[in-house]
Image: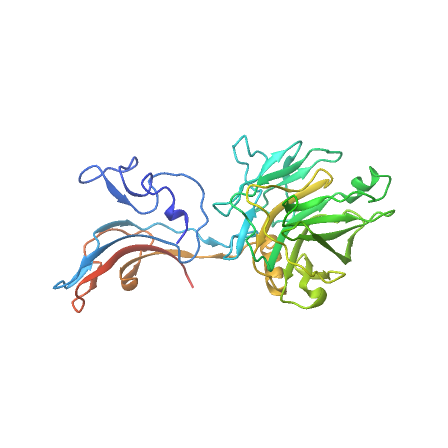
Length: 389
């Protein structure tokens, strides 16, 4: 389990000297949850906090926990908005929070830990995003028009991309100011190739995703470069989807799967819909870039905004791409919730009840029968957050 219930063990959770309650016996008490307000957390159905110990149950009839409970009216679950850390996520840079860290502002923290954070460089700006559902919109990062210095920089420590990188998905939101960028370049895209993500080793492996400016016209196409361990680069483009004017916010999902055949190895989804395969088959997979190597997201030529950059080590399909897009733009659903108190033996629930809103009680009868058990067993008292169905 990795939720807000696991944060600050020994400080405001776990067995501590509390600052907000009076301890009935001694100076310490075991706190499930938190002794004080620390930071906002995202909790979901099934998240729990518990205290457990190994007990010899030989000759015991019942076990339980003495507890005081105060039933409160529960808030509803609100489904999270935006891209989330999943089991296959290698890195996720959300830009919604204004972190008060001078070395990062206006950079972005990586939601995968340990993992490299991003530091803002040059005149990178922090601005509102406008694609999310009303009431749930956050911040994004912007390369101002005419910028020559703005980008987000990181150091590949610990290394993001593993060896044997034969499948991946790169999701990101961006709002490219194609009109202003072309106007400043004589009305064409010639020579303007702004990076979306560039995590490559000089003379070695890596991955680059960028916009390739057409020569002599106002047009950009998404390009993908894979480098092998010797630094040999192979670049493919998505010719079926072009940027020829300002499109507003768009979500791109670049999906690579070496097990696919032909041009289907490399696909581009735009707003959750398949927009293009690569114009030519991508023949090689990217080798892992070196740990400690500098990398960047955005570049000074990418006039416009970017938000929510996530790299995964699996190839997402059409259903997943559309679901991720919907989770970023749809108003979240709400579900009623409740607290459940449980006694578990070796992870199996032996006793359970709902803490009713408005109820205040000292428990001396919340016990589990263990008459048929003997020897050492792990006995736990758990508070679980559950969706009301």
